[in-house]
Image 1: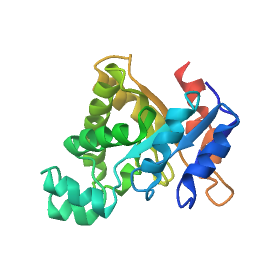
Image 2 (image 1 turned 120 degrees about the horizontal axis):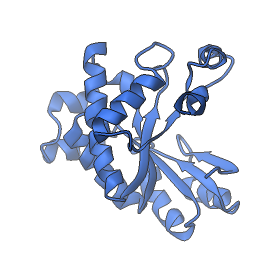
Image 3 (image 1 turned 45 degrees about the vertical axis):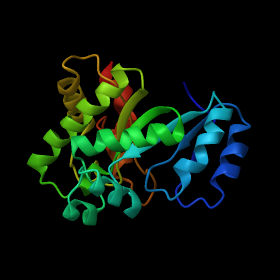
Image 4 (image 1 turned 90 degrees about the horizontal axis):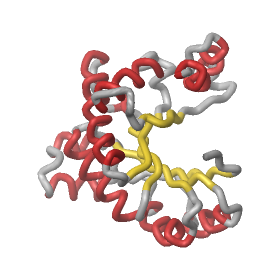
Length: 212
């Protein structure tokens, strides 16, 4: 399904008003995250009123309040809370449950900038596979539509490739019937490497051709 309009909610002051205006188009992607201030709570009523709107949120980063709640619930240590980002499977499950409660429904959960998790290259891929396994559980139960990776510099710095992410999703699902659906990254003249990789058939924008 392709939307004619997308709404990002990072640093948006009047999130509910902006979302209602965007949803007037009917078919719109709303992109948010738990660390985007109060966006989750503000978007819940809008999403309930607009069943055709598609909703993407994220897991990984968290606000200080959510970090404190995770600490109280025994999901994170004090050091992990100070880091502000976690790929711990238990935390991912807990955070996704909270996002579902706030938003009402989720079409995509992006793993949010996994390259910022403070893991070495040899640690990052197993950690992503374990996160994918948690999100596969949600998808298999019909609670989310699928998942993906939102990255600022992961492709830019070769932390992973599309083919590696697909391989990790297959491992997490135990078969080729996985729910990895999308990648999200900045593409501009400032960050031109994804464009160069696409021309060489190696970037996310060439993903469909690679999957065929």
